[in-house]
Each structure stands twice: as structure tokens, then as C-alpha cells.
Image (cartoon, rainbow, N blue to C red; front, top):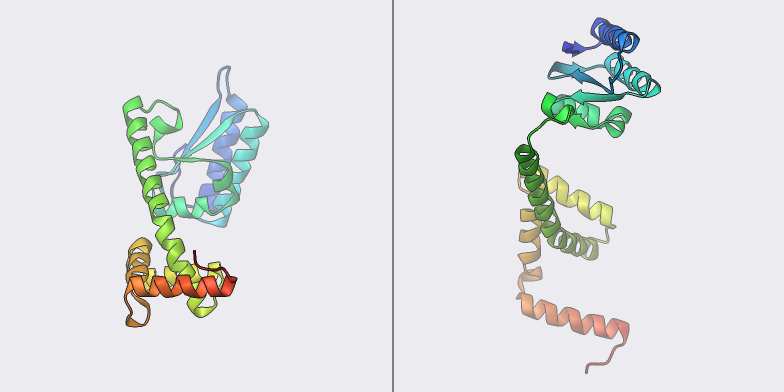
Length: 196
């Protein structure tokens, strides 16, 4: 099935009818129904309802429903719905039916691993920046992250780069070693721990 344009009203009805026709005429060995949303520009409430209905109908018939969707705005809409939580979105037919080459899948996996490693490497500095904001302004963790995210978006700067700049900035113009030593002394006094 290849709906085009806006998935709403008549288009959603046509999708529903097409899924019903496939389910009514299905033969032996049919395990997967693929809906190609590559030419869909937007998805309205009627379109989401039709897709959810198709997913339930396929599930009840013991079939897999797979959606092809490479368009970023449509992917965002679908990913933010119950449907997006239930069904993975595939970039093309080869991926949807599992015929993408091993080399392609391996390349995609490498990219995901690289992105995951970058995200993990960013966490400590972001957490440190959040801690600085929490301590300085009495914010909770979520509020501190909101401050960082807001500044990141306002200045079109990566969150990690902003956090790097914040943690590198010396408080009140003092040097980092001096600030660290004072923090150790103050924490020791606060916790009543004697120096070794």
C-alpha cells in the first residue's frame, strides 16, 4: 500500500479499505503487511486512527504490520503516538521485509554504536554542569537540565559543548585548583571529616 499526500479523511478511508482487502484475500504464507508512507506529507487524526485500526486488524489476524517512513516530520508525528511505541518505523522496503544486506545493516549498527558512545561520553560533563547549576541556583536536576537545554537551543550550541564551557568556567574568576581545594575544605567541614 502506498498512500500519498496527507493521510486524512478519504486517504485514511482508502488505507483502511486496502488493509481490509489484503486481510480478506490473504493466502497461505502471508506473515507481514507493509504500508509505505514514503509519499505521505502529513498525518492527521483520521490517518492515525486508520493506522491504529490496521495494526489491530493485522494483530488479530496473526500478521505483522510494518510501516515504511523515511520523512523526518512524519516520523516525529508517528513516534510521539501510541502507534510509534508499538511499531518500529522502517526507512525502506528492504528493511521492512528484512532483505537489507548484511553490510548495510552492519553499517547502520556501527553508526548507532558510535552515536551511543558519543552520548555516553557526554553524560558526565552534562551531569557536572547540571550539578553546578543545582548548587548555585538551588534547582532540582530536571530544572537544571531545562536551563542547559534552553541555552543550547537559543544559541544553537550542542548540549555537550555548552556543558564543557560551563564546567571549564572558573566560578567568580578564581582558578580551578583553588576552587577545588576550597570545595574540598568546605565539604570536609560540612561533613565534619578531619583531614588525613
